[in-house]
Length: 172
Image (cartoon, rainbow, N blue to C red):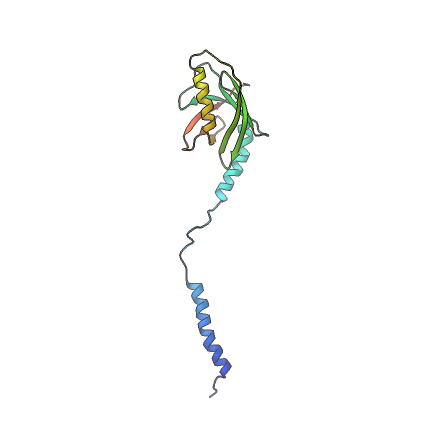
């Protein structure tokens, strides 16, 4: 009968625990990562779609259909238009004209900033200046949008529609 050599015996003794450790590492399943990375693929696809949609949104003149869920003053044409190749917006409050910058973010983020507004006073129809002030305030409060080919809605930070527009028929 052959006796294992001292080196072979030592390797056998070291090899068994090392193999057990390696096997244990493969079998052991620690708890899931407490801070896993989110799957950004759906968001990236939504952003790509928003990039495709923006030219037709920006290429449309949008007429105000509702402010705070109520129709605007009858006979007053309030509209907005985003310039497709630049980051500026123009429009009319029904009394004054405005222009300013906008920033788009992610899938449907939109902020209108730094508006320059003409300073005409309009006395008729009744309530036009109050409507203008509310419109300009809400325009500055909007943080995003939802759009279809016929409707453009500006939303606030609670995802409420604050201004609704319909696609205009004709030029402003």
